[in-house]
Image 1: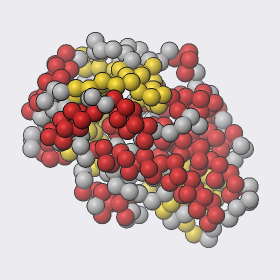
Image 2: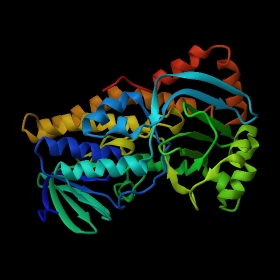
Image 3: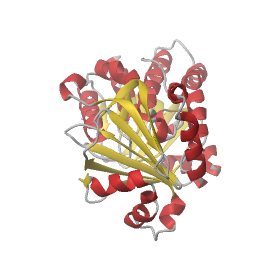
Image 4: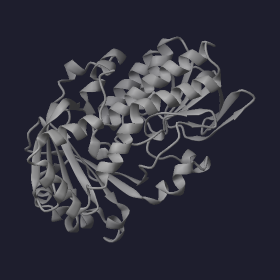
Length: 377
């Protein structure tokens, strides 16, 4: 590990956005320090489905996706809380892989590229002064010409910086829960099961496993004594298809991976001259199945903008403006559509109505999917 505490770029958060950005910048010859509060490999709440739009990019980073033999997913199955259902092909499609496997592999590639990767290191604050960033961490103070926030769905920095979305988005208070399971399900299918106040997705990943992940309003958990098993029994199992699924799968975790206080409100892409990337810049609703690809694509946009700045081709203000404009051009519409779709899901009446409307017209399903996804990059 390099003992240097001054970097061209400091990155807070070692998820998909942070790792892929670090790899791209390090390969251009820049000194990159990346700070991750956990130690690889580790599990995190995520649907673990990646749109095919990202496959070429991941291969370019050096991931042996073909050798991994990952399941290809090209069919969507949706059920309403009363069990009514619809199936439709997935335009472009995707593949499944766990964050446990994916992030650890990218972390190794980052280290090979020359990134200084600080694991088990918390970032307490990033502040800008005299043209540089000061990064306060559990490992001490670091400096960087540029800082990027890739810390995911929520962070202590959101609170410390008093980010605007926290004023109302923080009150939405969704809870995410994830398991890995064994299941007798079609490997080419991703299923989305609605229940009162939330929805549950399941799709295949590596090694014959399936990722079962659901999002619910916090009231469901609160009203069941903060007990996840009780909530699953009383709320999730109201959907007969989901009841059958939950009773038949073999759970591979002793306890689920969880996260609380998830927000889908609009966020800013720059805070105090720090570029926000991935979920830190804006989180698409999980039912759209495109959060992982968006994080990867955003890292590419950020890498192009930051390279121009580091090479003195643009000013800091020009870089920040360029990044925000390109980010919004790619993702603002998708997030807006995702928030609109989410209004129907998790609400028994409206999710039933939506499925009944779409069932005779499968082109409507394809249209909605296209509006939450992009082209290959």
